[in-house]
Image 1 (cartoon, one colour):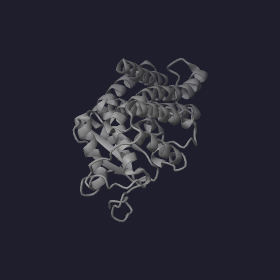
Image 2 (cartoon, rainbow, N blue to C red):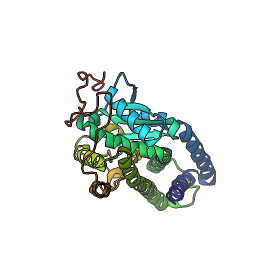
Image 3 (cartoon, rainbow, N blue to C red):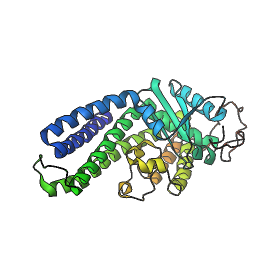
Length: 319
């Protein structure tokens, strides 16, 4: 049922995009917008991971470049029964993470340098388990397609706005100036609300499944508490420039400085933490074993990362 609802929401996003195309170019514009939306969906299907990773300047790391981080991803992937995803780092001080890719066999996990430096190993494991849950549930493709269409809607609305300001648009749609103004305001807002609906339903599910993957819900609960405390104090400039991608992150990366940030793409963090605490109680997990990573079992520090990695460089703690 969740996938049916998500498909319906994606159809609504496509309909908004086509309707805006009609405002820009009449019936011809609607037809063109429809085929553009179809092409965007197909393009996102095969290139979603590359698009988003490139947008955030992420670089791939391996067991040599980031041994502990890579080992956590590998261990949790095995627990989740998933192929090993590619592992990326984005050089951003805001603690955050996302997963992308069209399928579990073509997936990538990306954490910011700020996240790895702010969290303990256990907390990072909770975050990675959450992202792997998105991969397991095929949420990564859905959210990337939604980001692509949402971004295109915003671009079309801006084009319509500039056309009105400079008198370069003939009213082939027949809606008039008032209708165009309403569309400029309502279309991006409607797209944002649809993205919110997609993201919120998938975030709770990923929290629950991620907690099961790492076998300790409180690891993720603690991580969410820390990330929420930092995220809105440390700006993510790339996310601010592309707010349509905000729903892909584990915590909303937007600072709330502009109109696009009035509505959160994520469920309330306190509610997410409360749900994880209830799950921990049901599982009898008030504490739990640490991950068996390359640094050796039982000796992982509980202090924030990067857990004894080499000295930091301009590209984060791994060079």
